[in-house]
Image (tube, rainbow, N blue to C red; front, side):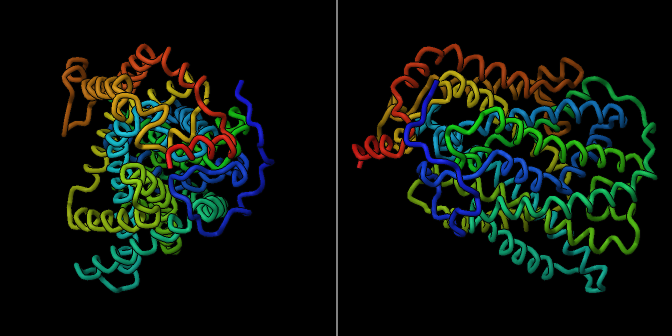
Length: 487
């Protein structure tokens, strides 16, 4: 059992500096604060979001499930928020961000390839959020009689990008507090939305979808839900003391994600049975609302989207810093925002946004499916024991191995990606050969995880345990002593 000598008692998140100066730096034990429940409120505040209503509507509109089938897929798929909880355990033990910890299974250079995949993913979700913000802004201005023009769209894109910077620039403390404050008003908003729209729902409408369609929908829920969040999780849990109860972390993160995501997906699926265009939260869903409620609804949509986008933008900055350590976190946030704004402009002037959304969420599974399994398997093999000083090094240390690349980690990731791609059904953009031969079944998540995680376990079950025994205990004194040899 790992011990943590020199551990200090945890304080409140409110004791953290208002402006976070750290990026992927090691968080000293003296600066570890907070409780697992802080993570529960953070995830709930982020996921009480209109995006999940959209995802629920897509289960009916795009995957053509009946409501009872959508409900089964949602309940099963959202159990994956327990995986997000497991993906939050590494940060308190290592004291650093997710894609710095990623150097343990892949090596400091090999980890950069995986970090690049994640950076692209995070920027993609930022584009999704900014697009919906701009759409809501245009709808509000349209109701005010302002109209719409290309120039107005450019202005809204620029304004949205500038506003989006705020929470990620301030950092950890402000984000956790702000997201927690958003839970009560957004819960009330969606309660009112449910009251107005569920009376029009036709839950028995449609025809039963095939099991292959249900599997494809399940892959979509997993990717957009708990299986698609471990890349971000440790960026927020790393401030917890290392002796924080793992069970409480898993329970807090799991419930904080499961409850809002399940409620909103079910609401979106129910609304889609009655409201034309329900997969469009801007133009479609307001048809189900009371006339006066459209104004506050659209205003809340904008704030909510900024909230969930702040998580992606914060993590994309840390991920970019893991790729290029010389860049400061605030510089990464500015760079990512600029890129996301440019890509948002492309999507705003495109007519194929919702097909892009469905394809993007599914194609990301190709790398996410094996990576999550490898990341969690590595943690279990090490029994949660990392050498934090070595994680911060890019030119040596315990995890440097073969010139900075741990092939016993990279190869399982690549093989797992092939396995996931071979079972992916992202119709009409791509139907994998094995998926095509089984009626369109999508086993991309399961095969990617099984092959990638299983192969990693076979190749590393001895070496990872040996590295865990060689790791320097995570104390401020031990870390500084080990790190001093590299400077």
